[in-house]
Length: 608
Image (cartoon, rainbow, N blue to C red; front, side, top):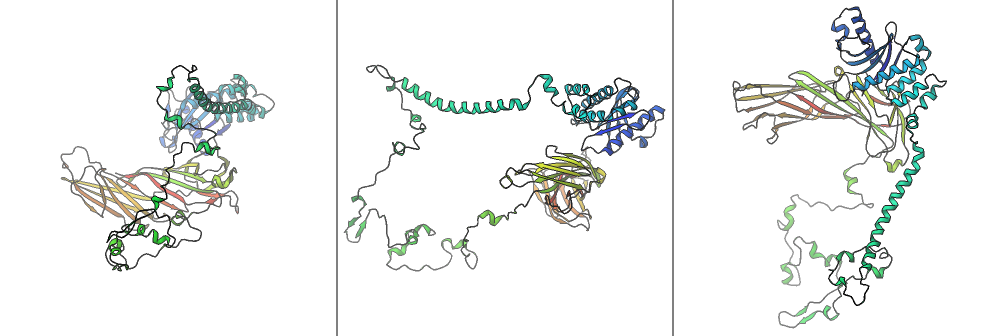
C-alpha cells in the first residue's frame, strides 16, 4: 500500500479536507494528522515536549518541519508516516504506515502528494493557495483528490486539471477515463473486440486445417514416390514395412464396418469331431476323456462354478474319489476358519432396493440451502518464560456459494453487516467481489464457485487479542542433566474447553536416556518430543509436562545457554469466533445467507 489518506491542513485554523480510502477508518487518519499538528506546533514554539505528549515522533530530515516538504513519523501504538508539502500557508499531507517492509512505497506516496499539490494549485489558479479560494472549488477539489488517492497517471491528471474549471464535475471525472487512450491514439476495447474474436476463430480454424493438411500431404508424397516408368526399378522394394501406416486414422472407418473389419484375424473354432470326447475302455480307467462341453442344462450356476468359490480353489477334494457320497467335513480350526474368532459368523449383507453408494454410507452429505459464510482465524503468540513477548491475530471471512451445477449462471448477491469490531485494527476487502456501504455494512456479488471465497481479512490490536492458552517453559541445567518443564493453563473465558492440544518440544540433542511425565512420543530423526492432551479444562489447575535427559557437556563447559523451544498446536470450531467478530444479515428477519461454524487454529504458537 502507498497512501492511506490525503488532508489539507492550514497553518492556522481547522483542517479543510480529509480524504481516505474505503477500508481505512477516518478516525485513525484524524489521529495521524492531529499528531502532525501537535508536532508542528511544538517545533514552531521551540518547546520540545515529552515523548508521552507527542507520541515519540521520529523525524526524517536535517531540519524537521522547517523546509517546504518532508516526512515525519507520529503515533505511539499505531505509527504512521506523514509526508507533507507546504504550499503558501496550507500543508498537503499524505498518511501511510510506518512499517519498514516492501509493502510500503514511500516514493509513491510522495508522488501522490505532489499530484494533490498540482490539483489545489490549479484550483486556486496559482500558488497563492488560501482556504477561501479552496472553498469556492471545494467539490471539484474533493472529487479530484479522491481520484488521485486511488492512483492516476500523469496523462489522466493533465486531462482532469484541464477540465477542473469546467461547468460539470461529472464530465471532469468520467471524461478523463478514456483520455489516456485518446491521447496515445489507441482504440477502445469495444472497437477492437470484434477483431480479437475473429483472430481467435481464425487461429482455431487454421489449426484444424493444418492437422488434416498434414495427413493429405503425407498421402500425396507417398503417391508421388511411386515410379512413373513401369519398367524402372522401384525404391519401395528396399523400403521396410511401415507399421505406423497400418494404424493411420481413417475418417470413413467408423461408418464402413466392412472396411473396419478388414485385417482382423479371428481364431477359427475346432471342427466338430474335435469337440467330441474320446471313450477309453481300459480296465480301471473306463470313461470319456477330452472334448469340449458347451452346456449342461441339468447343473445349476452354483454347482458349475462351485470350485471357484471354495477356500482352496476346489476340484481337489479327496472325497470325490472315495465313493458317490461325500464325507461331511467337521467344523473346527481348518481352512479359513482361523479368520473367524467370534462365536458366530457375520450376517450376510442385504443390499437395499435402491443400492446405496458406499460414500453415502460413510459420509453424511449436507445439502446447501443457500450461500454460507464463516470466519477462519489464526493466532500467533510467543512466550518467553511466563511473559507474552509477541502476539498476532488475523481473521478471514469466507463465502461458500451454491455449486455451479446448482446455481448455474446466477450470481450470488446479498448484503451483510459485521459486529464486534471494537478490537479490529485493520480491514482489507476484495474489491472485485465486495463493496463497503459504511457503518459496518457490506454488499457482496460474485459468481458461483466450488471452493470457499475469501472476501474480507482483518487483524486485531495487540493489546485486545484474546489469548486462549498461556504457556510457560522452565529449564534447568544441572551438571550433565537437563530438566525441562512446560506449564499450561486455559483461558476461563473461552466458550468451550480446548481439545486435542499438541505440545512439541524441540530437543537440543538426540537423547540416549529420556524420562518423561506423562507419556510422550519421541521422534529421533527430527529431535522432537510430542505430548497429546485430549482436553484442557477451563477452570482448573495448571497442567505440567516434564522431561529429563543427559547432555554431552556440563553447565560450566557450555558458554552459550542451551536453547529449548516448545510449539503448541490446537484448533477450535464453534458458532462464535475467538475475536468476537460476528456476521449478521443486513436487515432483521431476512435470511440472505446461512451461518457456518467458525474456525480458530494456531499459526506459530511457541514458548522458549
